[in-house]
Image 1 (cartoon, rainbow, N blue to C red):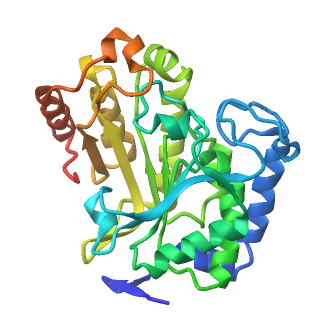
Image 2 (tube, rainbow, N blue to C red):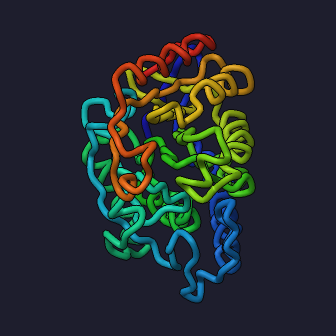
Amino acid sequence: MEVLVMEGRAYHPIYLSTHTNNKITEKAKLLEEILSACSLCPRGCKINRLKGETGFCKGGSQVRVTSAFPHFGEESCLVGNHGSGTIFFSYCNLGCVFCQNYEISHGAEGKDVSKEELSKMMLYLQGRGCSNINLVTPTHFAPQIVEALVMAIADGLNIPLVYNCGGYESPEVIDILDGIIDIYMPDAKFFSSEVTREFCQAPDYFPNLKTVLKKMHKQVGDLVISEGIARRGLLIRHLIMPEGLAGTKEIMRFIATEISCNTYVNVMSQYRPCGKAFRFARINRALRHGEFLEGRVIAQSFGLNRFD
């Protein structure tokens, strides 16, 4: 196992210590129990996924994966020399109408895999030299992922685990994941309840986001980077939207004042109308460069200066 030493402290994937203390299996059981009346996310559909019932996200008892490969388009601190080991999960608990991966998040693209197969995907990506295992849209499959992780650890997995999510998370689930996730990478999408109601059917998005971001930061702290590679911490993504719909000012103020001015924030410029965005006049156009620049200036005005 590679052990990193920075400023006198040894760093290794946190899940290895948790596994040594026999706590990951306990956490996996707690997560699986949630599936019987699913409340893995704030929607709280309460359906029994263990019996094949499906709710808003469409996820069932078995993991569905679209792809697993070394990704070179992620944040530079995740990519390194050999890519970020992304595993893209099908479906989504947030379901933005403009999703750039609409076929994955709203459709059924992908295939069902066993937990053993998911474990082997993790090990395959580590074998390819990836800097981390990057779980893309994992929220609705958290129980199965943790069970697969236990298998992968037994076979030698020892690189950081990235929880790459939409930010619409259950605080209780985030508590359970304490000691398992090395890098939380949530979106901070919207401030306005009216906007999130229109585009995500989630008017409680921002109040919930505030709670989970605080929990994530308490668990892993500010992002730690060694030799150009992220090892542990919080990395927040914020997609600038047309017409200021994301509420960038309010979100950046919250991050700076209630999380940390040292938060690593990726202010993203790649919005374009995808999925069903054409049905909504306010978002049926590409982002203007000036809008992106304004968003970045806003972040800097609150003292945030760690960007991708």
